[in-house]
Length: 182
Image (cartoon, rainbow, N blue to C red):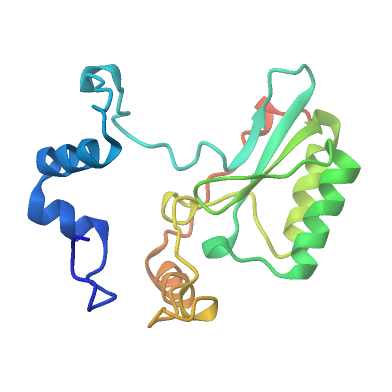
């Protein structure tokens, strides 16, 4: 096959793409696939100008009347088993029992009645978690690193957490109480 198979760090598709370019790579894929790939014009894709890292953090109204979802910030995607059980209990007692994970390594508790928002926020804080975050923390992600991957060379969770404590602004985005019934 193609690429450097003698060095695990170099045996990546990105190195083949760098060496060949996309046109040659696609031609080789089509040759292997034995038919042409369907091409789609790039103008069909819309790239957002900015990513709202806060889109899932905080309390947000849902389409369903009287219901909100609460975005919970997990420090670099980590939570203890006790926090996990606590979040599950909050979701069961005050929501639909569902928990949704986000691409930012945080989570969402959907279907919370507006009358229960204050109780849910307090329960989240009692678990040592938060529903507010700076822009930096709301979008902070880190791979498992040496704590959970035998191939990792660094503790990729502790380093960003330490950096966050140093460079993060102290102000957190908070709920505008006029928008929520609590």
